[in-house]
Image (cartoon, rainbow, N blue to C red):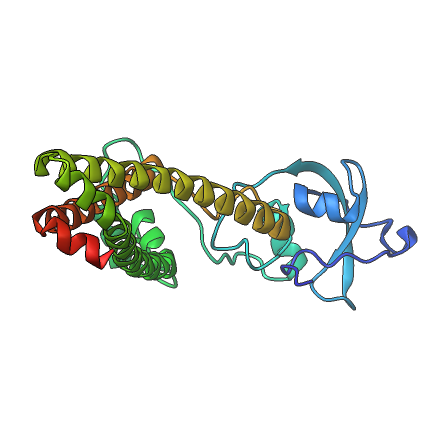
Length: 274
């Protein structure tokens, strides 16, 4: 289990630290659950396992917002006041990053450029740019998933077209009988297209149910594995609408093409082929 630099937890006798001030700390809920900690418990902190030097007491337990960038790391975090953290690390007046809150209407780009003109040992960047840089991995993953989705849609569309063509072709004898008893070609085509539409709608409903079940199982598994409320599989109305519309359009189109071809053939020829 990898922990950040402030979370080395070792049982150390109290007598070694009776003259050092107690540090107030806040821990996240996941850490409190794993170690069975509660407010008022005492921890001993150090930068390495053999350098435990400070005693701390838990004054708060917080639930940080879920972050996709850190959920896979499995890290546990503590929060200390900045002076306490600097003293513990032996590095006063040093920070990795801090943020500035601007007044409404202020231009982050202009301010960051002004700060960078006289920057010594730091660089100022707007938060939007930092977020974009840190989200590049997720953008690549999103494009990869989009490509997989397009391939899946094309493959399923071809499969659906083949199924619908075979379904209509299987009605050759029925078509021949309807032609022989005098039913109009328009009526035959309409009946076959209606049947194709019903098959497409039923198949779409079954696909939506299957997708919902698969997404729910995926979320349950990974949320339990990583102990996070993040949603790993999301079935949106837009996705459902696109899938159903594509299925119905392709089903009706394939049924109409096959029905028109069957109705145009000679009844006796259809009967012999059947």
